[in-house]
Length: 454
Image 1 (cartoon, rainbow, N blue to C red):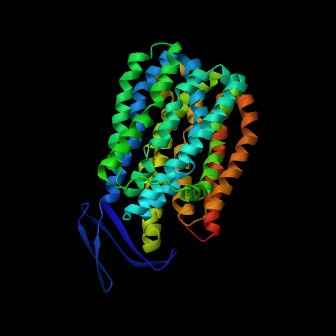
Image 2: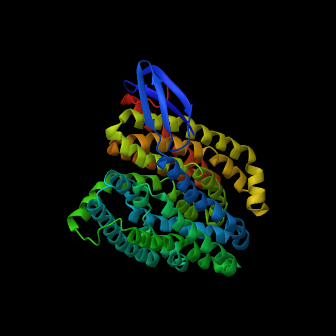
Image 3: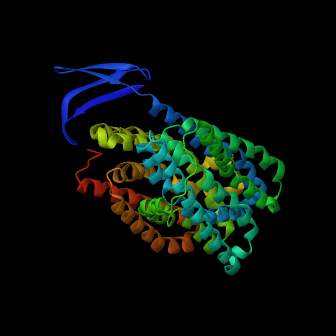
């Protein structure tokens, strides 16, 4: 592991005393600065969490990619599009039950991981908040299925996706991430995902089995969540059961700004697929979804690093601000650089990726994939600027405003683009919006004299 140590006097000025050393995780590095000996304990927890998150994130893309070529061919563009349309629609319910807890609750758990009583209060307040939000979400779904024609025709697929929402309530990844115990949730997640792979090949054989594909895909988080609950009980990380209505209200208040932000994000992510389905039909969604699945898989390869950094930056922020900022700046250089190289590779290799990945029936997806090719780089940079930096500096309102403005921008440009260019227009709209998000976050940080790029 290579570490670059810089002694900082402030955000923008370096004292000329840095050393680049190679050390093993857990070793003690001795650094000789001018006139000062420093002994630094290298904690391997961060590296382990990145590794485990890499397994979780990798399995979320690599394992489904085992069934992906099979599903796109068996279902065909139209029914694969219907599957994507319904899954995107159910993401609204997932979004509501998430309510930003994956960030706010992770932050709270990270700061209180040595206080078992406080952890118990945090855990159950989040779970009960999610349950209340789920009741509201399924009520809205029932009304929509009864009144909107596009949803009346596919109600059985939407119903089959219900475990996706239930699993989101049970799946305590935010707890394990905050505790920096990603080994256990990794085991739960991979076990659940490995279980559903053979079920796809066994039960899905034709387009009329699309509801079975939805049920199988939607069950992953529910299985992983049940296993996660068992492990939390088995490891005795909590003191017991707790129901405190005041804490539930507080958890909802804490998550509000992040919920608004993630809702705004949905205006140019989830909503793109839904709008495309309403305007251009399921076949266009099939082409878009095929390209977007590949793009998401590539993008997800770097997510474990940013996810593992977030609780560590929160832990360091109050006690060692300079170290926290150093981690953020390193992630700009290293993670951003890797994402840029990956984006270039996707753009160049798009024809071969589509041909061998999903088949010649999806040739229209080549242009879509090329339009999305640089999204992994753009999204990684916006995560570093927004989540890792703005949220840790408590610029939650400004973070929300940027995403709301960008979401509104997407609503203004997506309809003419989709009407004129169908799935390609949807991809272009997504690229423009994500680029605006990243640029606005970068400019905001500069206005606060936080310079991550010089």
